[in-house]
Image (tube, rainbow, N blue to C red; front, side, top):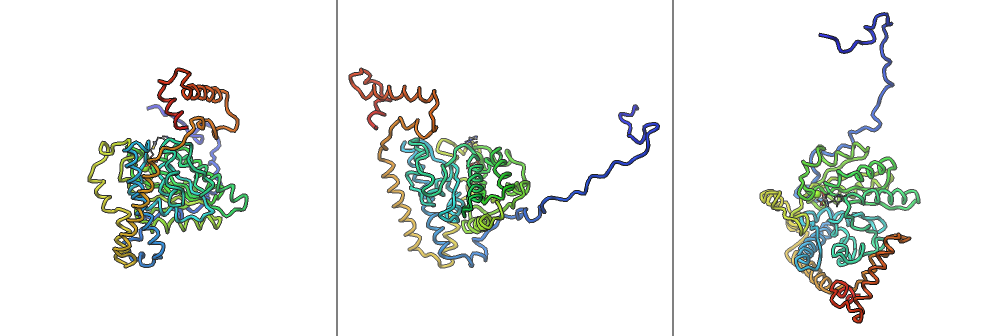
Length: 399
Ligand SMILES: Cc1ncc(C[n+]2csc(CCOP(=O)(O)OP(=O)(O)O)c2C)c(N)n1
Ligand SMILES: [Mg+2]
């Protein structure tokens, strides 16, 4: 058989020489301390729970109960046509609440569309938090008021924003940490890569919390990532990866608090993966029975974040039946107020579609704005003979 290649040493007349060895190579960072633990960190149901601060436990519990009620109420509002869409975080309340409570007022939260609860637990008005999902008016709130960035619908785009803000704060000498939330599916986006890479290179004071709820709409995690865990992705960027039981509010709070402290000390970013489960469908527009088995949902029901916390607090005597009743009553009052306010028609000006978009409007948008203005004026004026134009009429009435 013919030889396919000939080595240098074998060439007739060539001097025998060895290739120069490469310069000594060392890993740039010791990867061992960055690696996540093999098992998600847990506190509830373990002896460590005895050492947890009872005041924090009660605060987390109250917010968990309110959060669960907020989710069921918002979902009901979609069925009544009062809300266009609602991505429920039922099953993920521990992540939502811990993320909100771990931050100081001066810090920033960067939520995704599923993180209304975190925004509300941080102090955002519960109705304003739903403005976007009602399709009413841009973001619906002033992000600066509670330092909550807009609920981001384009996946993972909130992550580079968080890194930019955190890096800028550090350059200015401001003591600010940014905490950004993202889903398991979002970790496959280019923005995730760019954000984590810059964050680590700049040692930006930012914490990334991945809520691994098992699915990106109907796509299970196994079909969109082959990583050993999502927390392992951190190591490739040179930041620590932490794995936590996402249904254990005190564990999530503990891990996030460590990461926030680390960022505040100037030691750079952390990636936290919280293992949790989305109990409801992706949104009210999705039918989850088409892609997952009820047995799986039932198994997670036994690991319900609200019930886990309630059981622990009752067993430890931090909470009694009266406290459980009061938390439920408080949540019910919040839901009633939410219903009442969401049932009122908002005062909207359709022309606002064009404001706050560009500092200088483009020619195309200016033309579209002029068209809409003419349409609204025509429908508001009965003499124009356009009284049958229902869309414009309805808009005109609401203005
Ligand atoms: C850039 C971008 N691509 C696609 C979509 C459509 N989309 C909306 S939600 C979603 C799944 C996201 O899953 P995950 O990140 O796990 O978040 P979860 O909904 O589970 O909270 C997709 C693909 C989008 N919103 N943005
Ligand atoms: Mg997901």
